[in-house]
Length: 316
Image (cartoon, rainbow, N blue to C red; front, side, top):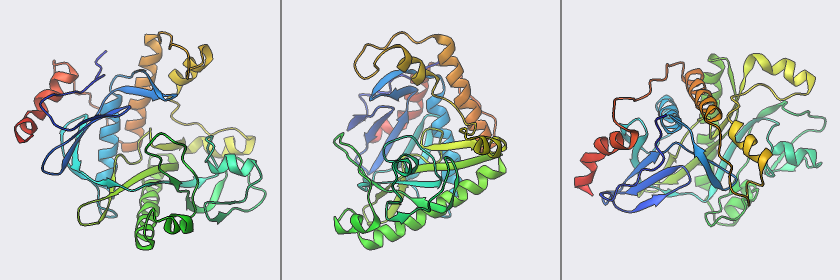
């Protein structure tokens, strides 16, 4: 199995290792972002999934190109299937999630809060009598604080965002307009593919001139929830979760066998890893309506990435 587990190049400066991505900041204001095949869950790395990094990079590429008329994004070039070179931005301290359905499982999801009896959340009031996975009257933005130091994200209202000085009023207006327009485009194109874009996360930053720019990734299987449209109505009526790209095989397998936050991770079977890889690839093909073409050119993935990044070594 071809795996890109690490992407550390001493020839490049200002190295930062994230859970999944390796980052380098060049002196001229560009950032190199390499998506590895690492699978992160429970605040740790569980394993690597073949082609996961390429799937995420190329899915985001499809969406960045399909939405560039709506919102400027950070992309400058794609020197490798796992690599995007973008503008270095100052990331805004508010995480933006747009939701079209009453769904979710986390503590800040609207379904979790709704089941606790809350109706006013994120500066919005939801009607009584809604059911799990029901479509919302209209898509909503559910912003949270973005805790860079590992703290817990906190639900915010638009008024709180401005009052705390996290964003100016003008920034919030621009950002919210971008987010809702991006989500509408995403839902429209997903519908053409037989999919429902349920909710998604966006990350925005500002460039040196103060312009708000879309960063990170967009509408990928990791940042978004998709349902298969033909499964929705029957599932909703029976109170079940609609069919989706279920790529949490590894997460569920680990959680059944240990406390994943404390215990050593048991060896994960190769067939489970392969199954998860196939789900990522099928998600790419369903979302983009394009065949996935793995870059298997005889080199190892790390050798291929090194070769394709050679031009950046000199400028570093």
